[in-house]
Image (cartoon, rainbow, N blue to C red; front, side):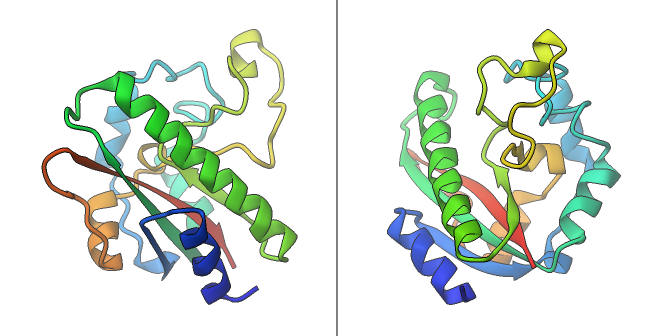
Length: 179
């Protein structure tokens, strides 16, 4: 499967943007880790894919940089109030579900890799970590851009994608990391 095939599949899944970048061009900044530590999403310490269980900022950066390419994925949603979690949550869920469908197609097409989501993994609810059990989906689980400390605004600019889409519109980003 070529990079153009991957982009075509992403656009067919209704992603607003899909751009392949070299992982060496991704900007990481550990200043984003405190966003996770604030625990606004409620997953800090109770989800394998969220801090502190996902790994240190250095480990997360190394995990991405161990691969050559990333397909950056963007969805854009009509959400008038960016503080409206009731509207944001289903949009993020739909974004990540589309990424999971893509991951399956990419893997079936001979392109192994892993996802970086618009939020932490929600394959199990609750995460098995809450009960002290091992992860049920270690090959499919995904951490969010913040857990990896990806500077999403700089990544969007590098890709030529809108980060701030204007009033009433909210963009979500994720990646499929591969070689």
